[in-house]
Image (tube, rainbow, N blue to C red; front, side):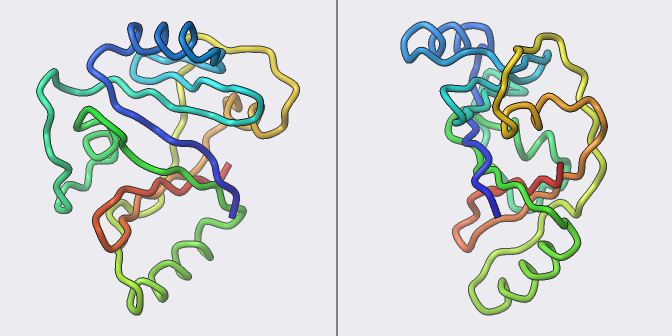
Length: 152
């Protein structure tokens, strides 16, 4: 497993992109209408536009992935990349019986629609720019913290 990114959900995407690029020196890797990936070296920060100006708590019963990942303002989820989604989910389900947590959103295919991209050399960053679909699942740890698992 490889650490992928940290994501925050914000009230104003453009304002936050400007803040993190100007104040902390991040660069825009990609930007869509609903999110932006910023990078500094090989490290990535995802900024997601909140679905509402009002903060909402993340319900463990929600199953719509965008509602889960963009339903409140603040630190949102951890993202990990795996080589084999089925194996990762199977392992997670077995281990969660002992250590807690559960699958909220089963693996599904996702295709992004990019509005802006950067030219980069790092393989980890180029992988995020791929236009072909990849698979995503969402799980929670024992405290309900969202974890996005990606196979791309």
